[in-house]
Image (cartoon, rainbow, N blue to C red):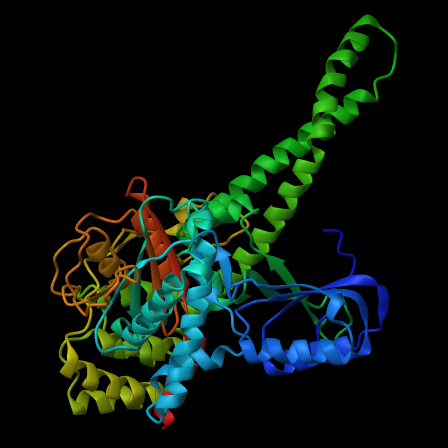
Length: 575
């Protein structure tokens, strides 16, 4: 393209009269006003307007009027609707990209005082992004959703929007040209819309895999992690101020091979792999150093010369592998820093204990120590960790604790410094869902401790894992994965039998839950209305590994970690 300069739309920009400008903007009121202003001020030679989601006719007319008034009609070279109103974080994961994500947050959808018009706006925003997603994918899905939830509202609206687009044959975005181009060529994908309320325990769960841990305990947003690195006081006189914490940010992207390979691994494995990578890097580095010292050979005797020619070849290959070595070093440093930061949290907050205990609660295994002990242990975790643990217990038990017990728990939580607002909301939610249906079950037991890690890790390791349990994960399906499995494989199950079925390509929309297509699907998209997390994403990735030739994409209206989710629950509980 040869783009030499990129600027934000609302920044102060000087006119550059002989240069074409490419705009890539959301068609909002203020953005359109600013573009009209640019036209009036004749900032550029020509204008290529690209809208992230479709622009309405009235706004297009505003731009046309401004162009007429500024006699710049000929300068507007092209106007495109790009249908890109979503962000792809991984090859198989996307999240809706709205600047103001509070609009579609879990809290916004579940507010008790929400009006119908506000709810319509929220749903339209979600549907607009999903529509963009399917236009980009070039496929019309078959939609399944649970009844009586926000997911159903999204399904009805999306079905209508896709139907209208398909009916308008001249302007349909799903015509023959784009369809064959995608990876979904002959079979249509299944879209499963689930509501966050089917499973509130997973987003609060302490986790044990690398990517989900980074998201849970560090500041990780849009694939970038921000770390605070404290450089302690170095040999400074007594009373010196400790050094300021420096902030570093790292991008964890698909290019990073270590990240791609280990983001779904249990944390102890990751620590071990970083150590192995480091050792193999050091061996390569030593080899280069050794060759360098040989190259400084003195004397001209025969042996030295033959050795020299032999080593020249080696050195040449060593030099050519230097860029690769440097890149390897960068990745090792990056993951050493990130993993060390995660490890500090695990040790300080005893996250391994929480993870194991929550897994036991969720899989209904017998508990080895009482919940009250953990809550009242001052060394175990932050108040928030305790609140998460108790909420998972409260959500997962069939029989809610008696009032007397609950009071005792509440007192212990308050003494530990917890804010009890989230519990207020979960209490109302549980009473409400009890009328609707039984809570989701979480499958069988999952972790088996492997003794203390200190024995597993070699002694030369940088990661001092003393006292951290080496927990190994067994594959078990979370509720979202189970629902997908039932619908994708066309299994009959009371959990999903009454899910509604929409096919936007059918001429008459019928409100049946009887699927016309009886074959299992090869491709599926799971979309969680009300927010998703890396734990579910990883669970789906692990599930599909065992299925030959099938693909799953995971999407959510926003991606939050437990801290952000608790905050939303707390706001809901204040009402």
